[in-house]
Length: 570
Ligand code: ADP
Ligand code: MG
Image (tube, rainbow, N blue to C red; front, side):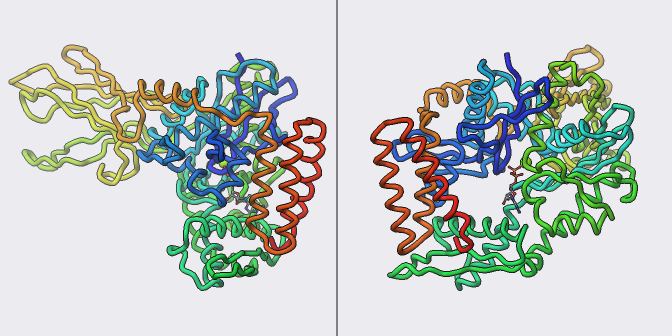
């Protein structure tokens, strides 16, 4: 059964496979490598996924969703039509669409996957990603940290046998930094750090704020539709600023009686001033990663950039200043992670071409339990953190801590598991807890081992063994309010399987129609009329049901729309 690599991104997702020619991206039904991570309901009530859904974000904000990766493992549901969905459900729909693309490309069933996750994903978010995979009918063979995948993609291209490199990944919603070393065919992750709430979108929001000023509106008071439109335009402007010094976009203000066309502008200089605080936030994880790896900035040989947002010149400039090195970008920053996930597939399936690479990864955060300490005899203080596996330990790893009961004759202990770097558990993330009965010993204290095992996917298993009777109990961290219980995953898989997904041969047509609608929404006057006519013509051709005609019309109209979309003030 085929195994694929998947980059399940906040903004875009990709699927890849390892072949005799190395890692390869698989294109979707629209012939594109990037499938936007967006899902929605069509007007007929079918589920739509990818570009078609993304294009409807502005026109149908109540029926379309994106950026749900930020809520993986969170107890949060959105309503789409009659049903409610969690981030895992929506991710499962994206995964299912990628799985189908891969099956069509490979001509065989695909039921196994390696999925990339930000290194900073915690245990709950990782389990949520597993659940999403299962709900899409995929066995998740393992999760791979995104920067590790990036390094695998670059490591393959590396001619030298000794290198220390820093991977910077700035995607739509997350920022990851990792330091890796390659030495005599062994690639080792030395450290990783990051910020789970910093990404390209924050830069977009900075521009939205600037546009609001130009429009004399407050960002918080915008209607959702207008906010979506402004965000869309701000994203366009941001992308323009990566290659130009001035960006301008056209905004149709419908708040007045007669819709009014306004041009919004921003200069690169202004944008850079607006992004100063975001850029500053990026420095800390970089410095921490270097320190955790026991290195100094000048020990770094190469800097690799991943993620669409690293295309912003201001990011390159900051990195160059900070590390006195020019970042590399020989691979497309959008493709790197999926290519690396494919390499990991090759390694897992022991592909001949890959015999020489050994890959090791590290635990991105410290894991431990709560303990009570006795600072003075007879004085007990709860709430302290006992690290068991420290951050940046090479995984897979298994570590034991031996503790004992505090009071004589104590009947049991509460094992509370935390993740984080603070000495006090209150400041760390609680992953779960369980109660373990200990043998009754009225005269003394009982000892017990807490064993933490952290697998290659970053999933934690906790086993407690009471030493006098050698009995063990395993913690199932599914009690966390954010995670979905096993039976629920099966139920959701069945529910999702029943959902009617828009037929894939129609995907290209739906995507084109949603592009028409978006262009229509964003224009006025003659141009708007032309777009409306184009859409009517295309719909008439669709009704004719002649495949050759439809294909030709699609090409023509796609070109027409590309010209409009690329017009400066759009
Ligand atoms: P994710 O990994 O979260 O799916 P991507 O790596 O696809 O994200 O990056 C998406 C982000 O990159 C978005 O915020 C997008 O606006 C930004 N982006 C894409 N192209 C450019 C560009 N040319 N200049 C600046 N930002 C860009
Ligand atoms: Mg990404």
